[in-house]
Amino acid sequence: MNMQRAGRREWIGLAVLILPTLLLSIDVTVLHLAVPALSEELRPTGAQLLWINDIYGFLIAGFLITMGNIGDRIGRRKLLLIGAAAFAVASTLAAYAPSADVLIAARALLGVAGATLMPSTLALIRNMFHDPAQRTTAISLWMVGFTGGMVIGPLVGGVLLENFWWGSVFLLGVPVMAVLLVTGPLLLPEYRAPATGRVDLVSVVLSVVAALTTVYGVKELAAEGPGTVPLLAVLAGLGLALAFVRRQRTIPEPLLDLKLFAERRFSGSLSTLMLVILTGPGVGLLVGQYMQLVLGLSPLEAGLWSLPSVVAVITGFVVSPMLARRIRPGYLAVGGLVLAAAGILLLTVGEPGLGLVVAGQTAYFLGGSPLLVLGTDLVIGSAPPERSGSAAALSETAQEFGGAVGLAVFGSIAAAVYRAGLDVPEGVSASAAEAAGDTLGGAVAVAVEQPAPIAAALLDSARAAFTGGLAAVAVASAVVLLVAAALAATVLRQVPPSGSAPADAPAEREPVPLGE
Image (tube, rainbow, N blue to C red; front, side):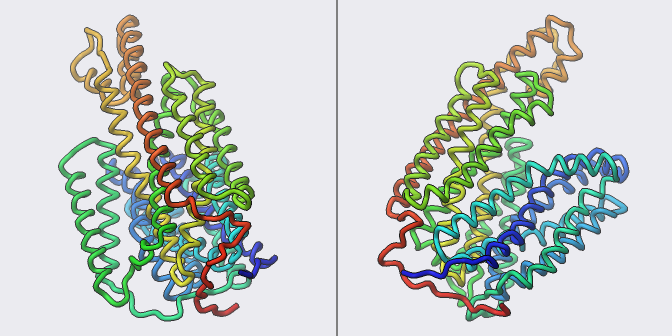
């Protein structure tokens, strides 16, 4: 089957599509640096500060499916440009917010605008790069942009906060989106589905509220542990999600085409991606604490020692498309996930020193990178072109939920093992013992106030208990990775290398191109 190969215009267009991806990942990281300065000026309450941090991610997760469908209907480029303009306006509002309430509202607008960007960029990549090998390379570069933003975000944010006020970190989005608004119409083709009806508003409400309540409940479970309110939120969210699915089966123009899941490569790749994403946030959070509170590294030293894993994942993103031209994606994914599981198990070797921790993290990120690239490519590539926006939104939604659920589940495992293993020495008050039993950081704070012998005994016990929790999470994560490897081996074994087109591949059904 002959496929049109992308030329210079498409590759330059890809650089334009990477810009919003880079910005979104930077935006996630810089806010944490700005919190002390904005707290001093705006004086938010504790609840307001939580909403300033969380509402952005909540609304991105909530609106992804809706925005993916709208992009399929009105045009992916049009939605991308609308979202870029809205993001620039909301960024300016956030930068000059006079109060915490205004900043929360601006962050909410940023979340809704951000939900337009990710599915639009991925869907346009699907429509611009028809050759499988080129599309895989394009997606890998897109993912490198996202990862690169997370690396340079703290550096750029630190420079801005050192020289300007806290709102300057939000103004990063304005010039980036201005470039996108100018170059997008010139370099990006427009695509939309050939036949569209009205957006079902009931489905929109069900999908948004289901996502918001579920993510809220899961995040609260991760932060506070089991409780009535977060459990009810999760149950309510799941109930609304079930109602959403049932409605999609009965209406003529569904917001989410459930027929996508009938394609084995699509559903299998999506499930495998979600399993792998489950393990990332929890392990990353625990390893960061272990480096600082057990091994005694400063935050800067811990950050520097995380660079090998960043280099590993970027290397994996770049190399995977090259290998996939000659090796079946299923083999690459399985081999990588086995390596990732082996790497993460290094964290269970006694009380792992810095060398084992860095080696384990590096192997984990290197091993997981082929599946992230190839799995995303298969999710996007196996969907019909007219549904690529919805497919991209589902890929991003699965990863959002996977990260939130993984953090809650693995965080709960680590907390339970920590509490069970902690032996508070005599002489520590009940309130101090309770604080020490909550987190390792709490134990360190309590130890500062104790006599030297008691402090030493408490720290030794707390660090040993935390190490046990890290080991338990590492084992559980390795099991999940091996399950993901088995799933990949089952559903992806027949997928050919990208350098060879399958003999029975159907002709692609192209959506309507507009305004080239």
